[in-house]
Image (tube, rainbow, N blue to C red; front, side, top):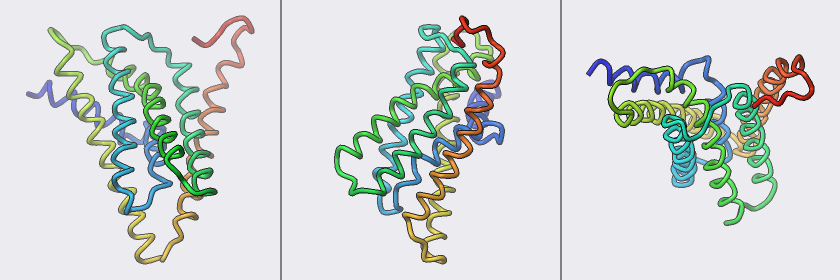
Length: 204
């Protein structure tokens, strides 16, 4: 049981660990544009993200898709920046069905990218006979951590609405802008090692 618990804890730590704040930023960016009454949309978009990274995690674990930390470090902040821009664009016009489907599709596609980072963490765990149970528990730990972040974020939004009579457009703009800004810094940091690479060498 202790070995099984370790898989779950590793997945949980990969989300809530302060050193993994890039994934926290992405979850925050996914939820920033939604109001509390839109909890169904929040559930759907988080589920889309889950399906994306779970699929990639499985494929990487069985070595169908290779992982490259350098490329992943570039792509993850890119997903945060695009999601933040979609949030701002969503608030600047009436969000219709196309807009909603676009965000769901982006969450699914970007989940595939984030799955590469999860896989890098998962592959360092040793398992013996089957990857099924370790994979399930690791992914479950990720999901519980993800739900924990969403609950905290929605709690902060509730306080903002109830006690500060906050304007949701300002909430979305502030949160999305903060996520975009931090992601930009992460992107710059990820590009630094590539500056010393030969021009004919690609980072993947």
